[in-house]
Length: 170
Image 1: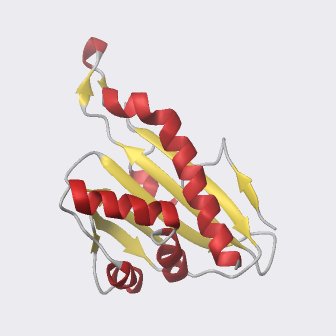
Image 2: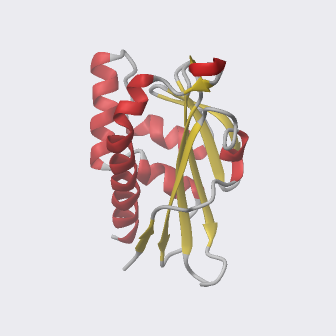
């Protein structure tokens, strides 16, 4: 059906702006799906997976950042550059980089035709957490709360990408 590739996946595209900067955390998960997918479709499905709808609901209840399906449609079509706590930082025809609130977190989505398998799309989902804390020897590092949540973040990222691909296959 499809395969999830986790691990040593190179950071790419718009997320490169944050990769390799001292103290920043970046990750990138990819998944190949035997279907041609546009960025618009990827955004529509990704932000409407059941677990992401729950996240959007919680943001509405606890952070006063509500969003509905129409907001996702507007983001996907380019009619809006915001969704709940996310604001588009950069976008082109096949990728989008979003800042989360005014904080150090970035979310990146990209889709491209698989380089070796015609009719297949490669979906990319990555994150960046910018260094904000002063560590030993005046080196910057990511915040303690995110360091504690890193295992959950990685699980959640893979789950979101897998659910997106599963829904795109339906």
